[in-house]
Image 1 (tube, rainbow, N blue to C red):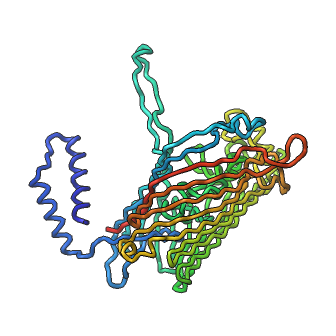
Image 2 (tube, rainbow, N blue to C red; image 1 turned 30 degrees about the vertical axis):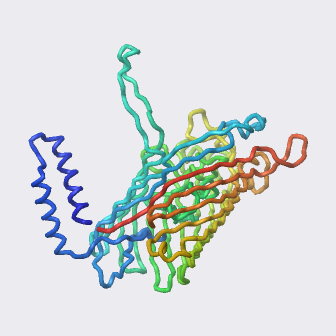
Image 3 (tube, helix red, strand yellow; image 1 turned 180 degrees about the horizontal axis):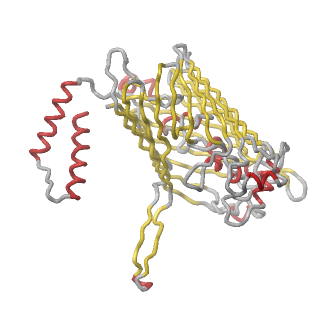
Length: 486
């Protein structure tokens, strides 16, 4: 396997060189000589590449086979991604939560998408030093071009042909002193909540990421940070992080603090700082229990006003402290998988931040919306692998799960510590059921039906009841996740 991968990589390099220098040619004899050279190298290292799993707590890659008897590969390659399609039996019009939601009651729409496609590359330099990186393409990436418009007198025109995002999700350098003490610096995942720590496509049943956490929390949350982590033989794993704070200018009603991780600039502001931590326990077979949290200020992490201007304003004492606590768990054994999560967050000075954001000038980075003081998300899913009843299918490593999931979340759970119905559509129950078929462990075919039940609120006549249309949908997808060492 290794010789073919190396041969293909070298052929690609040669082909690229051929485009640049027409004098360079790659013949069949060259290819055969190349393969023979790789075979000689392989005889010096008889260990074949092994499939590896990603330790979601540390992000470090580990062999599934014994480290004591096998030599560990230095180069890690892998990734994950989703190919999805859905049809929603509700409207996607931005006014569907307005004063006349009944106008959109019979509307519907569909989507084909590539929500996340991630390429991971890592290398172990030896002596405890390693590096890791992830490049993420969201929704197919971006496509833009400059064209000459013949119909417009030959003018040059820039066009966007496809929406999406391309981001460097991870890039870190790590020093491992021993299993108890590892230092990592760089862009890395902030593992607060179950979804951030376990966001690979095969780590949840739904076609799309769990809606509750995905709505109110950044996902995948990544920041430039300094991290201390490690693990014990008894199954305890720990992680503590120092990172820049969020930007309260970008908070909004629908996603709470989620947009605050981004930056419209070429750098991430660090006028305020934050800390994050996670502890996992895996000492019981098939069971993982996890606690995680985050705390940091967010208000002055902006370029909209100077510190001197803020000190002389009514906002001089505003800090916008974001505090998040989360518990998540997973159990996998005897053909059963059960996963659950609960996340609760609080933002101090929410009313003052709302007033400040709404007053920002037109064209600012702020969405100029209300933001909650409290938000929450909770969910649980369970599935059973019916192929576990058949020894032949178990031997082929095939799985067929039938699952169900329930979520409740509200991005406007409380405003300045008090309940509010102003944005009742921000809270909902969601139930889902479907299947996951694994023809091989790294690939899953998914199908799901879900039903979103929006939270009731206070009507114009003062009575309480249903205000908005429910949101049913069907979705299918093919996902993959795999990591290998060479």
